[in-house]
Length: 133
Image (tube, rainbow, N blue to C red):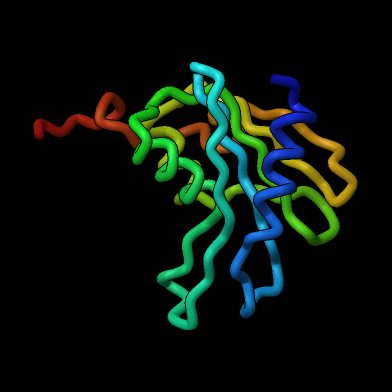
């Protein structure tokens, strides 16, 4: 799967965004280690705290289908500039695939490639904590 194909899947999904409050449509396409793609869109709510980001929707979609190993995620938005994931989405990605490649796109589908550690260098994980659970 090429980065361009993954970006195209995110861009297609983006059309289904429910974003009446921010007017900012976001799409995500998550590539599993097995080659499957799961998409997600941002879903807003009048109670803003209940809004869910496209990245987490894609991840939860994959998890619901038994997938837990991810190699890449593409994130698209409909505003000018690159669309970055929020901290909550980065932390959820860290739970499952701390080595994931993240493709951030601009409005023309130009992309920048990062790894999770570039965007979340001090991720929270049980391995990093001195806690016995």
